[in-house]
Length: 122
Image 1 (cartoon, rainbow, N blue to C red):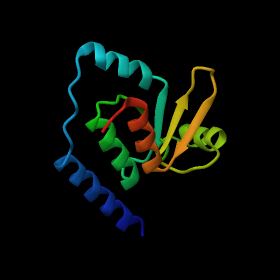
Image 2 (tube, rainbow, N blue to C red):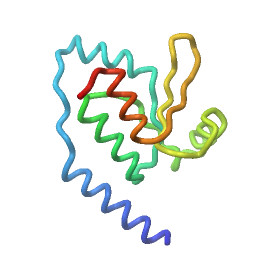
Image 3 (cartoon, rainbow, N blue to C red):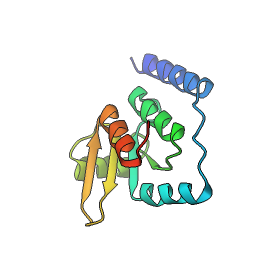
């Protein structure tokens, strides 16, 4: 089963590279404003997870520079995700709020919807 998952993961990554979306182009000032908001966000993910790939493609398409954290390859990040987020599930978007609270958002569709709403994306 591990070999099959590895093969499927490589296929997913290969297809992602072949069909990678183009990023939106903003003025430097507009991109800086977006980057200031996304600086308080990070996404816990697995490199070959198809749902994580789905979210990463949206990040690229909309020019959102959100820190990616590999919760599979880094034991400390995995432990942080479980300890603070409550479960070992990816993708998970960690959002630091202005009042210093932290929101943990799971499910690829929910993450994409949140980002579209947050940044007024189509």
